[in-house]
Image 1 (tube, rainbow, N blue to C red):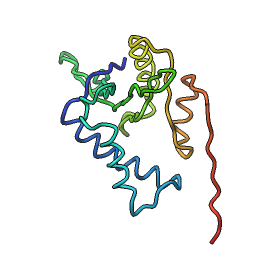
Image 2 (tube, rainbow, N blue to C red):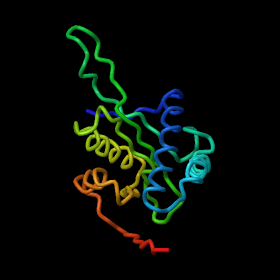
Image 3 (cartoon, one colour):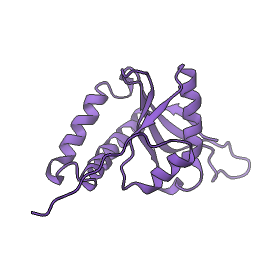
Image 4 (tube, helix red, strand yellow):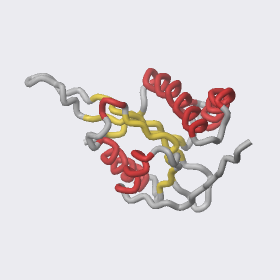
Length: 166
């Protein structure tokens, strides 16, 4: 069972560094940004959205905590972080919760943690009085798209582009 716990300062720092790198790579892979500028642009975007880090108002960054399956018999089962989930309450009308980043760490993928985390998120969002969760997923991220579709998320928009030969 996944629980959402406020991210620790150490995990936040590690996550932010990797998230900036991952977002830059996704923007390059999707053809939105040139590789030479991607890391700077990604960092600027994260710092714009999270000027106060995890204390930025209307932003929620959670460690996804799961029972530690490697705990030996008789030992206290301290939970382990299997990923990070960041959502915000943008000033959009109608109001929604918007997932900005959702990452399951590599060793924990394909164990059901993603689906469990999305269910835990639904409870958090309902407790905030909202009834809609939105997100963006890069077209090339087929695993994430499949997870979201399986969890009941529907496509609301599709952007397309064609790169012309020089």
